[in-house]
Length: 273
Length: 244
Ligand SMILES: Nc1ncnc2c1ncn2[C@@H]1O[C@H](COP(=O)(O)OP(=O)(O)OP(=O)(O)O)[C@@H](O)[C@H]1O
Ligand SMILES: [Mg+2]
Image (cartoon, rainbow over all chains, first blue to last red; front, side, top):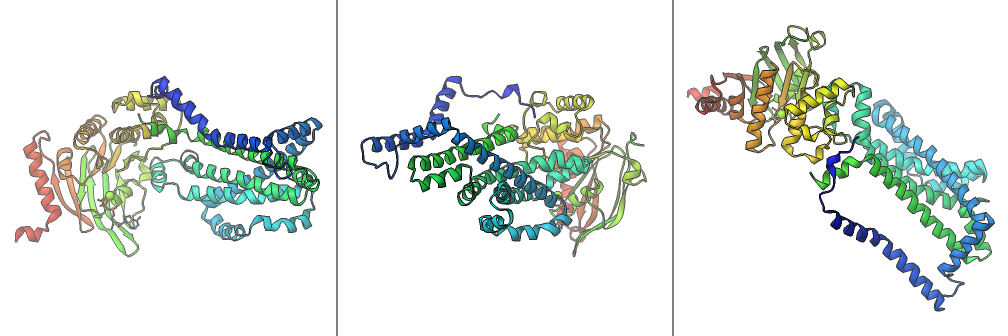
């Protein structure tokens, strides 16, 4: 997909920068306000550090743990589990979704079984998985994989089933081969829905991992948090929560950037020509 | 024999959808290079017949022949233009024309056709940046890729305003004449049919009910009007009613 040189925005540059900086600032307003009020309350002594330590204390705790290497180590092991789980689960969901979306035989064979299994909350499988796999890496990675597979599967499957049949008929009337139909019509038409599934799966990925690491692990952010809880180390508990928030936000940004990368044609038209 | 203009024989075609008979028994010929219009009430089976000519639907009965051969034997290139533009929104206008392959001859061909429909400047635009009339011109250009011999038009101008519509009619007539296409146009507009076609077939009672020859001079509004009135009367009234 090429972008056109003639698509420069119609707005004069001045008005554009102004509206951009204003819009760019708004999303940060509430988080910044919360942190400022939080810090003020702590500094003024309204908030006991046993209940909620100040942001500054949390930050210092973060710096100390980074220096000792504990934080980077646990963060990278969590990231590793999350990514690998997502790749396995998302990959399986994608393959099954495409297969069942394209082939009626595959759909009849797999879909109703998948729909049945899907209704089991995957976190309910934790005891079973611990019994089978222990508390090693494969247990946590499998849980993340199971959790992320379903949203990707459902959305890929629906994305393909809902491709406009008129477009497929058009492709056929142009003597397109099945492969061309898939590459040029079915896949791009299903992609927005597939990406919705991926974005949803990213959320499930973190939730699953936190729960799994909290219940059974000897490393990772979830473990760090449970461990700190045992020592009533409030700074680290809060630090872990903040890290989850940041990781969640980053994965959402990654998903969004996929959308802008692959789906630029959707937004282009709205600005109008 | 892909280069000669094909004669299309519609040979006792019928189509059932379960209990419903969309077409019972339709037979007529379309001469090589002819511009034929098909009119009739909504639900009269016009699109169904067009889609069977395009091989997008299998007839329940009968067959469609091209120069007395089946579609596969004759290797005739048939292109269809639909009522909706059916452009691929994720591709630029140029890619919508050359989506089957990206080789340079295809690209050159696509650019030539965009010029023909007057959209040189829009090659890199996406479909949703175009107006309805521009989209239909892209769809027309796309239908002309890979040198078709038969052009099937299923109400392609229905959604356009009167002026754009008139311009598109002239563009289509010009192209069909220049490229010596065998053309079938389905339309709800009897005036459009009378103005554009060499021959007009009225679809009614699940078959080809009546036939009219186009005006001798399509630029003569009077002649066009007379033909249009006759066609309309055939659509609305049965022969017995007219005689009574
Ligand atoms: N895929 C299908 N399945 C079942 N019935 C169909 C199908 N396609 C068409 N029909 C029926 O066949 C009949 C003829 O439909 P068709 O679309 O050919 O009419 P038409 O003359 O093109 O009408 P219009 O002018 O409204 O486009 C209608 O009664 C329609 O409901
Ligand atoms: Mg129709």
